[in-house]
Each structure stands twice: as structure tokens, then as C-alpha cells.
Image (tube, rainbow, N blue to C red; front, side, top):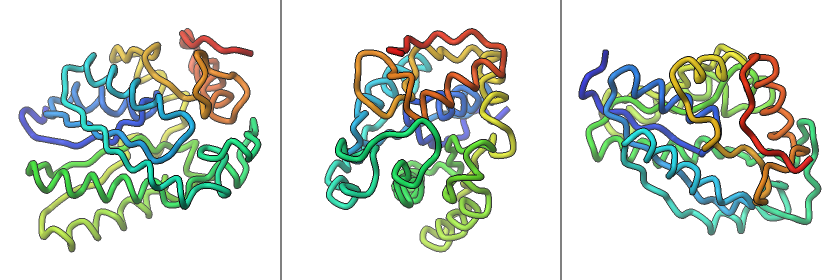
Length: 218
């Protein structure tokens, strides 16, 4: 157990990072959460992140970086409604270097509160497609953080070696309230059920044989 050892969790409001937050709490860490507005269409993610932090009884800061939309417009369908969403992985759903941006802010926050651990929700199912979800990436960020702060900060994706379905199983075993999480790239009242993120969410619950509490529009 890591009783009273502080950690920062990058909490998007989705199931992956929520499992990480609940796992960190179960390990005894003193958890501090960060969530980000970066110009995404589904900015309700931060509302769900807040609900999750409240359910854990831990503090959360919402960092407003909405002006980043200026560089993501015309590039990614997560920020630009004029770019069609797809149900499978494609280049237009990538938000380039997003995790690096978030982790950089997390390093600054961690240094300020004397936390030596930073966790985020990258996992094995993402690593094939997203460079900033791979171990070599976050180990490089860790080295940069140490050089930039002169602190022994660790950056980890605790479940980087396992598929999303296994993450769902772990979350179920430690009581993660998946009904509070949000995955959809859109901002509807329900998950659209068609975008790549919804498809992956649905598939993960099915493969994990865990009841999916999500309401899908389709």
C-alpha cells in the first residue's frame, strides 16, 4: 500500500482513466486528478471526470486549454464537426501529441504538490495506433520531467500491457462506476454508439463479459 503517497491521475472521464484512478485509490495513494478542456466536441467529458472524482472523494482540477482548438481545427474530428467521425481507427481521429500536452501540465502540478507519481490511462489496445500511448513515449516523458524538475517523478500507464477488455474486468472487480464514465466523441445526451470510441467501449464490455451500463443512441 502507498498510504499518503501523492499521485496525479490524468482523468478524461472515460473508463480507462477511471479504472486507473480507482486502482490508484485502492493502492492507498493520495489521489489528485486533472481533466482537460482542449477544444473537444465532447467537452462534457470534464463533467463526467468531476462526477468520478466526487465518487472517489478526491480533488480534481479542470484545466481550460480550449484555445488549443485553434490548432486542432481542420485536423481532427474530435474538435471539428466538419470532419466525419469513423467507427474504426483513422488518422482524422488522432489529436496529435495530446497526451504529451496533458502530461506536461501534470508534471508541473505534481512538482507543485510534491507528488512523485503520475498515472494515465493508456493501455495495450491503444498502443498499436497511438504513439503517445506507448511505453517508450511515457518513459521518455518521465526522463524529460526529471530533467525539467530535478525531482524523481515517475510517469506510468499502469495497464499499458493489457487490452481494454482486461481493464474493464479489473475496473469491475474494484467497483468502478462505469455508468458515470463518458467515451463518445460527440456531446449528445447518450453515447452515439457509432464512433470509434463507442465501438471500442461496447466491444470491451462484451469481451470482458461485464454488463455494459451505457445508453447508446444506436
